Length: 143
Image (cartoon, rainbow, N blue to C red; front, side):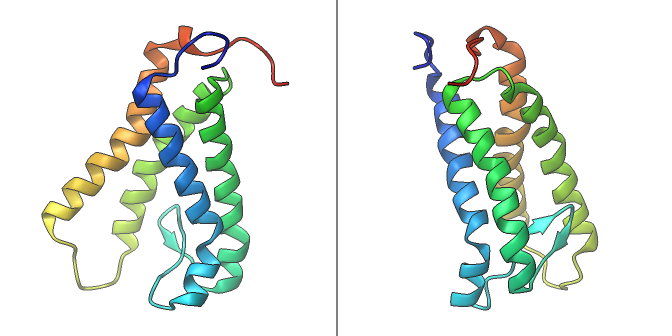
């Protein structure tokens, strides 16, 4: 609850999922070091596979997503523009990744449809939800 306003189940779930994604991004280098078959972070369609690049870019993306998650959790007004930027980033990242993908193995169509549904619901859906429910966002400044 933020100033008596309820977040609601959708924003609560999205804040938690984005928080988990932030932690996952921050630990990309550790994931790769522990299991080299786990590949790296993907930014604008480019998969970064070295430990150094994941050590730098993983936490940077983690901070962005963590900030987004906290803004949703606290219902801050500055989260609305961030949600729009993320709504454009996710589809762009996916399209560029599949364009640059050189691996001849293609995931099954069912997996791709399910992945796109979750990714688009999370990114575009959150931006649309915030656009239609601006009144839920707190006008109180950060403490």
